[in-house]
Amino acid sequence: MRKMHRRQVYRRLCSIVTGIYIMGELKNWLMPHVTVDLNFNTMAINNRVKSTNDLELKDRLVAINRVTKVTKGGRTFTFAAIVVVGNEDGVIGWGLGKAGEVTTAIEKGVEAAKKNLVKIPIHKGTIPHEQIAKFGGAEVLLRPATPGTGVKAGGAMRAVLESVGVKDVLAKSKGSSNPHNLVKATIAALNEMRSPYMVAQNRGVSLEKVFKG
Image (cartoon, rainbow, N blue to C red; front, side):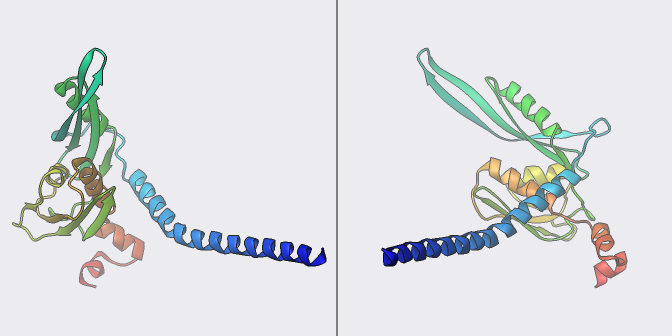
């Protein structure tokens, strides 16, 4: 009986130690991801544009999907439109509108985009630095370009970059071509941008030293 009791206690101790080890490894794996998400959300909140009264926003339709639902009375069609709005001077936002008519869906998308505006730093018509971002299955790469290069991007990425006011940029989509995920990934990459003035302030150095090193 004593031997059986000792074996049970030993097995329970082994299971407890194994559980503690697994929880520690899981915590070490999760912490970097949680930190990145928190930093991204904090940066998005800090860049949020609250007032749109003084902004001249232009809207661009990125994609529109028709959704069919089969009911007893027949088929009903609804439309989902993803729209980006921007003032071509560093302000950008995206929205999704759903309605039974195309025009109503676009209008709803524009209104949703105006409530989701963020401020993006632009330096001499291009982005300040290289940036990679992911959203869902989409992964985008943005690189600054010299004057005269133009917007080397296609589809949903071009609509976002032109709306925000970028004139010269090299952009590449490495993952899914889903326009919804591409728009969100591109805006996420732009949200991670830091202006030279912000970098100089954070490092406590002059602006000249940031450019020349």
